[in-house]
Image (cartoon, rainbow, N blue to C red; front, side):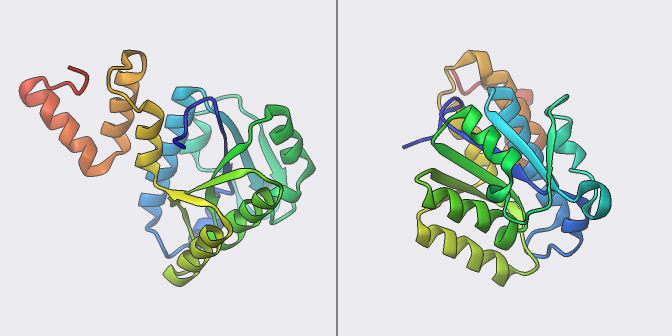
Length: 207
């Protein structure tokens, strides 16, 4: 079943500077770009979103500004637990939102994402992982973490796929400009293609 803006909770986990220094499976620029794309998509479509950090003040540093700027005023839930699913404040918020589908992105894949993914699956949630909005200390670490979650029932997707799945139909004019705007800014070569088509001959996917 495809995702829609109102049927899931997005949890963005530990996008913090200290965590990113050792991340090697994805370039830091790409990671920040993809995280920004996910955050802007979720904010634009009104997705219920939880932002959480670990040891923000004492060790890991602030969450990426690309994410926090997409959610002005949103409280960041800071934890001591490596597994987000073991934090009382996070679980209280998940239960308050009350949706059975969970979408995860964050650092590191093998710790920050595996923990809540397996825990949520064990409790009967449907879990999706945005694979290119996560990273780990090596390609091996990232791939083994993704395989472990997939084998347990998690469903992988990408950041651009997440944005376009929320839009779904170019005839949805209320979010058309927002979606193409996010794609133009954060969508890489696809975004460049949109800019070219609109600039050169006024193309529009919805017509």
